Image 1 (cartoon, protein in one colour):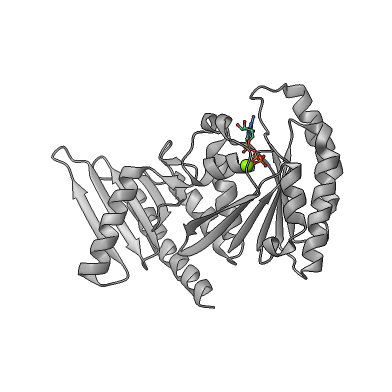
Image 2 (cartoon, rainbow, N blue to C red; image 1 turned 60 degrees about the horizontal axis):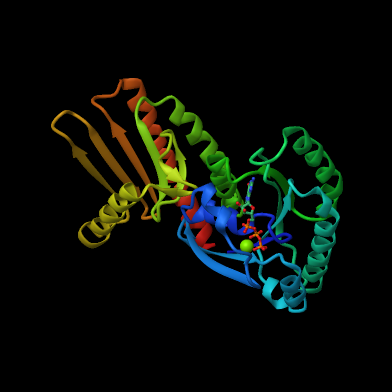
Length: 302
Ligand SMILES: Nc1nc2c(ncn2[C@@H]2O[C@H](COP(=O)(O)OP(=O)(O)OP(=O)(O)O)[C@@H](O)[C@H]2O)c(=O)[nH]1
Ligand SMILES: [Mg+2]
């Protein structure tokens, strides 16, 4: 799957990548340099390699690659990004996006489009101006993409958890039916009296009810290492596609890891026995996530 991030220089493309996928803190993006031409990165998600193309937005680089439409070829998802702190350049951004849509037309391609109205925060910006800019940006940009499979969202690297969910949903948008499972799981988690984190086997967090457990999409390193180790045991010793791993401390803390169909993991942390009701709901969640894993595998083989 190929995702292309496009937008004028400084609108926040490399920052979005860094915070959502590369475990950077939002503040760390302040020292990023402009991207030269374009950069590509790989990120595994639900067992697929996702290629993320981050196109430098400075004028000289735009000129250079706009003459080579091949670099845009094969884009499944196009993410045009608008800097809400820079309304003077809305029209320039619009021209750029129109040029890009022309390229896709020439290539005979129709990527899905998710427009980010970005920097939706008041980090070094006035709240009153922000709301005005959102309104103007919507007027300028929303009907540009009306012939496409299109959605738009307000984003900010300072809302890191929301941003991770935005990317999770975008990455899953090509799988039919998965979204409803995730929404259901999100509800189930609220009612279970234990800490639960559902990730893919590479450590991308899908749903959880534990604050501060991920950086962007990526699960905390120590828990990721644990899942990795168990996954190796599953593969090399169990030689089965699923398995359960359990641990317990002297004072009654418990961890339980379910690996489902070599693709999804559910990490459960309890501080003692949990109530029957929660346990019932937990069992339902596990069953549902097995189905979820099946759907992913089916989508891969189709
Ligand atoms: N307030 C705020 N600042 C942001 C946000 N995202 C990025 N920035 C800042 O915007 C500046 C430029 O970010 P970059 O990610 O380098 O911009 P870019 O789009 O990659 O720029 P080019 O590589 O030149 O095309 C940095 O100082 C970031 O900290 C955001 O959501 N809110
Ligand atoms: Mg950049």
